[in-house]
Amino acid sequence: MARYAVIDIGTNSVKLHVAREVHGHLSVLADEAVVTRLGQDMDAEGDLNEAAMDRTLEAVRALAARADALGANKTVAVGTAAFRRARNADEFREMIKRRTKLTVKVLSGEEEARLAA
Image (cartoon, rainbow, N blue to C red; front, side, top):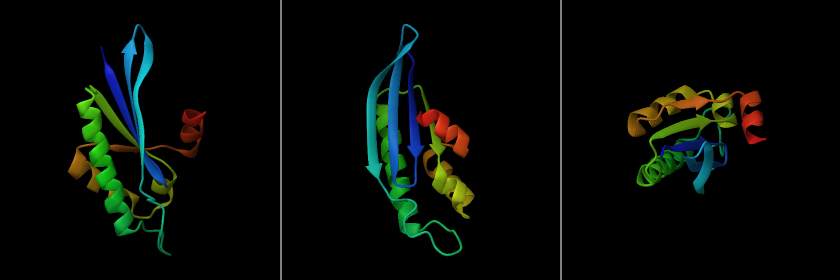
């Protein structure tokens, strides 16, 4: 059975959702969150704080490993408001890709609202 994972990188926390497909429906295997405060201490120019990026990167790495341990066939990563606002968001996305092999898709505000509903 296919297993899917989503890593949701938000302003305050990084969340992992893992589900498997059973007869056309999704069955949740894991819902976990790590508070990282990525948006904390954003500087006057709009750059993400280095310590906050380090905390968030570590959480992404740990949750990606957890998804692998749960047998996820496909893991996707999404970024929300902090990525839309931060001047150095592209740099941080590249750092995540280099260290985890995950490409972070930045959701628009509309996409984020629709998926959260």
